[in-house]
Length: 92
Image (cartoon, rainbow, N blue to C red; front, side, top):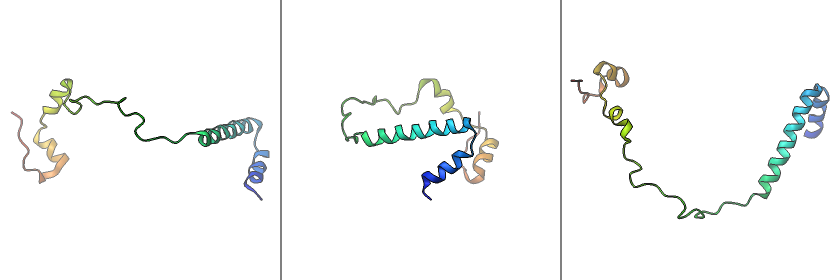
């Protein structure tokens, strides 16, 4: 028995509302398959010169300066990292 016959056997036992959903899904798969076959493969370098990254892309954002410079209390750090980090500093 082919897959199509197996699907048909199962489909005959389904209520009409479920059969409608299955039909929608089958139509989606047909659409998807048609689009995959007609798709032109991408060519590397076609967007060259259209995309740029700012020189300060990796620079910290001003609104996060307090967060980045925040030091955590020693007990909290020990819970996170254990006692292996001897370079932990105490808050003033």
